[in-house]
Length: 307
Image (cartoon, rainbow, N blue to C red):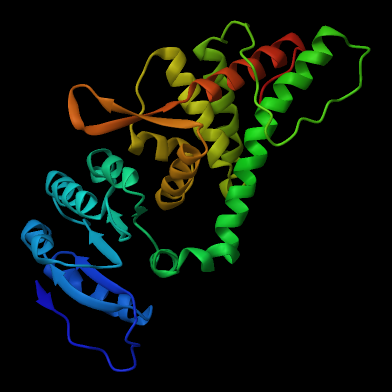
C-alpha cells in the first residue's frame, strides 16, 4: 500500500481512510477524501486489497471504487473488505457499476456499507460526510430523518389501511376508526392472495403516470419495491438487487439506500442464491407479505383499485 503524503491543516485525530480503486481513479478519490477533512492512509488497486489489509492495523473508512472493474474482481475485493471490517468500527463506502450489484452488493450490505451506483459528485460527498460523522452527530441528517419517517409511516399505513378497510367492508355503517400505536402490526388476514396479474396491473398503472407527469413528482421507491416483490412472490420468482433498483424507479443510489432501510425495518429479507452463494435475492418478510395480502384483500372487498 502506498502511504499518502500528510496533508497540511488536518488535525491529528482526522478520520483515517483507505482507498481501494483503479490507479486512474485514485487521485480523484484522494482529493474527495481530503476535502472531507479525513486523512488518506493509502491507496491500493482492487487486486491487491488482500495483501494491503493484511498489514493494515486500523482505519475508520474504506472507500471501494469498482467502477469499470470486472464484477467478479469487485465481488472478491468487496468480500475481503467486508470481512476485515466485520469486527471493528470501520465503515465502507462503495461505488459500483450496475453490472456488479448482484454479486457485490449483498456482502457489502451485510457489512453495513453505503452503496452508490453512478452517483453525482454531491451524492459521493454526502456519503463520505455521513460515513465520517460520529454516530452521535448524525441526529440532524435531514435526508435520513425524512426517509426514516416516511418508512415508519409506510410501515404503519400498510397495516392500518388493511385493518381499517377490513372494518369498513365488514360493516359499511361503522365509521369509528381505530388509531393503532406505533407498535401496531397486522395479523395474518386469512384472506387469499390476489393474482399476480392484479398486482402487475397496479404497477403498470403507476408507471403510466410517468408518461404524463414528471416521474419525480410521484417518486415512492418504498411502495414500488413492495409491489414488485409482492408480485414476484406470487409468481414464485426471485428478484435480484439490480432488478429491484429498476423497479424502484429512482436513481440506483437512492434505491440502494431504500433497500437497506427497508431491510433494517424488517420489511425486506435477503435470500442466498442456491446456485451462486455470492449472489443474493431480495424478498418480502412474512410480516410484509401478510400486510400486502390484507391490503389487497380489503381493497377488493370494497371494489377499490389498489394504488
